[in-house]
Length: 291
Image (cartoon, rainbow, N blue to C red; front, side):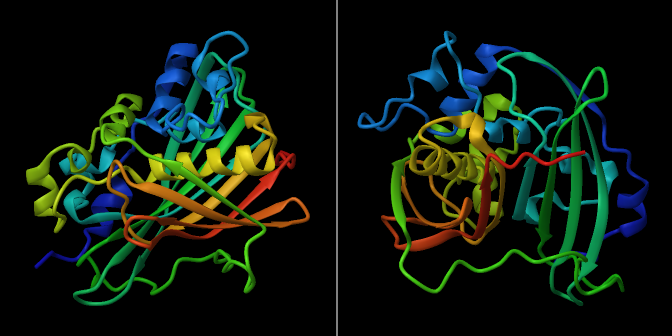
């Protein structure tokens, strides 16, 4: 049985700042890691070719991050029991094909679901240029299994993501993943062995390695871009979602989309298991946040 979260240790931990010098090669590797080019019926050469390169907006999630920092023993987290619960990304401008960005990540909130239950940890990353211009802000919520019982608040503050509309979707988009997709996605910085090593996956209660949640979200973002943004990646200005189940590399992701006057609500399932893997999704087009 896991021990309660060491809140003091986590609050004292200084998450390393990260500086990323990235170029078209990095953007192409990222695009491959979220499945770009796998569907022969969709032309995604502009995500994979340096001439007229489009950078997928969800690449902001891997830029300016020190990697999977919960593996550092000094942070007080039991990393093998962490599940990615929710991810939000707001862009203040489209990503350039190359540049230098600075990332600063801090833990902002912690919640206690009770003895023997989970702890919730929320971390926020700001991504800025060298001149200090804000490019993106991402917020992730982790569920740390068995780490409750330390006596904190039961819920995290803030608005909850809304459910999808109670009607048939306006658009349904289906995209494949590859059996090597998790291995490719690791090249963008998240080296959590859960996504590559069978023994680690079994320790976490899984029968085999799973796809990164953020790779799944990148696949879904591509579906939204093709279905609602005419293939123009620069138009997707925010994306928020709740992860409900893991995807195994090689599975097919079907995304249901409701277009509510430019606000996109979405839910994604794996076709092979008919299982919802992302829910309560909300995205915007052409609505970049103002500072």
